[in-house]
Length: 154
Figure 1 (cartoon, rainbow, N blue to C red):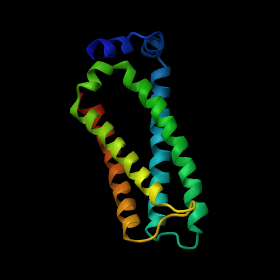
Figure 2 (cartoon, rainbow, N blue to C red):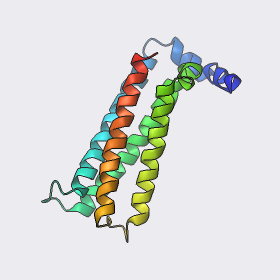
Figure 3 (cartoon, rainbow, N blue to C red):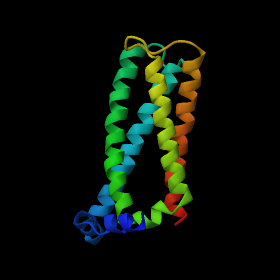
């Protein structure tokens, strides 16, 4: 595993990212923007499912935010992978990084459970959906905090 991580750090793209004065800060800023868009869309979506913003029709509002969340997640995945690649060996050894990855997997699993309960494209009703929305808020917020700790615990 150590060899694989060291190999990632030696890829031409990664070396170019390390050597550039501007590329790394731009990738970092794009990662922060993606996370901001992701968390904003997730929070608004979950709050709507929990009953906020009642004047807005739930199905189209949530559908729009879900598309935004997917796009933002894709941006965060790409930029996060680039940021990881610069110090892959170091990050992979950090418990807080592993915690962040675990939280992302749990948040994704929570979303898949939610989608399986959705019927005909509409959001499921009932107590389970409330639990899933609250769990989503907690998990994605925890991802944010874990990610911020990575920068301060290395």
